[in-house]
Image 1 (cartoon, helix red, strand yellow):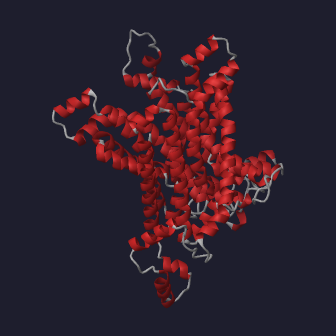
Image 2 (cartoon, chains in turn orange, red):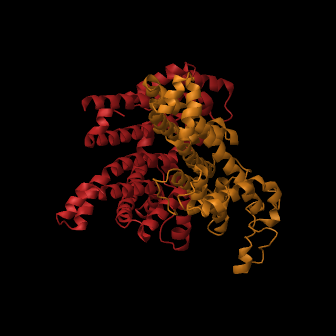
Image 3 (cartoon, chains in turn orange, brown):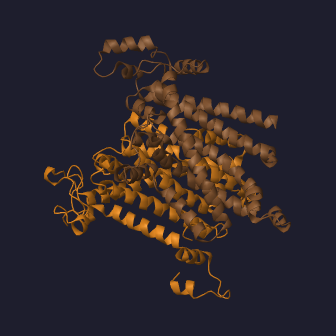
Length: 310
Length: 307
């Protein structure tokens, strides 16, 4: 759909297709557009990191440690700040901008893969419970209760510390821990949909339960599902940063933003920018994903609005 | 009601046993406890002796049941690292975490409820927008990052507050704000939506029609109804804060349960780690149970469906 049909057709005489109407609402939702914009930039930066990064993010240089970012030359007259290192260098003389760009990859990879793993687990459990009810539901509900009682950060810390931290362990552990919200929403939605006419019709036509769940029920709960996906993605990114910050997540020398915050902590009293830069990036990424999620919820379910920037 | 309670209690007990088994299996299966006790550089002979002495050569299930039996009689085992009863060690660290948890919950509620009520009463004004912005920022700002910002501004630049330790009440100000701010957005949003719903209800219109002042109606009629789910959510959030305080405790050097957990995890001190995880799960279960029962007592619809 192009702009002209969407914006120039306020009259009820020209009914829009549902897709066009949704796209139209998306474009008018300020929070959604800001979130989508920031996230698109971050994804691009992450994908193109090898092309964009001016230096090798792992290259250390003793002579070039803690060069302040370029704006220190503009505002404070710092003689060391240089356009060669726009965001300065860290404690080991590595180019901060390059590390930030590669860091975006780590945050996004962890956020997306974790959310997808937990989505598969949670959606399978929730849909089975909602469709079959009875004993299946009792077991799934028990698992959800048990999951909710597990202290997330502590257990993640413990497992990662004992198994040995790598990107893969981190993704698996968080994926196995963050499925509860998916299970809760798909369970409720499946229960509501299981007796809808189109489901009964499909069953009468001889469809298997797997087919009914996949092609009749899932498309109808996909909107709520995507909102949870964004939520858990943000959640996973924050937890990764927290674990890395505690020294038990992504391991040096990988440039995780959480790890950069931890490494900069002892320096932050003298060089606040050393934590301000990764901190701001982390905040912007999580904010963008949350705004996108809130926006999606508003746009796909217009009756339940309430985003801050709506 | 009795049947509902019994059902809930049994479920809670089952959850606790399940979680404890999972924690035990997960930790014991990934680390050789004999190695952890012996420390680095121990001879094979010494390790074998420790294995027999501590009973690590027994099957996993047997050791788990022994551990569970010990817990039932109040014995949480002995720390590998400190060679002291785990119960004593936890007893020393728990008060700091509980204090931090209660203060943070109080802070979150004291900010969230007035702000939520104001946002609902002055819907779609700048106050409403301000409240929503505060909650959106709160959800996007990781609490350890917020803690670092507080340290830079109030600890280093303004020098108003101490940045590390737990000696005086001033030491708790920044940790409380950092941890409480994390629980605040959810409480605020729930207060706001509950108040909006309550203010549109018939009994509010009746109260206004019979000439009560708007202040009385908002606080005595609407808020009383809107606040129940907020209280349940507050109970659950308290559990989350006890589990999540590890980061805040590490950042501010508060020697509580979270700090102990992190040190014990680093040194593979399994009895301490297992006990802390179990204790916090137990707190969660109790708090969620309380929230459920509270809801059940106050809302007969929940009891009858048993959901």
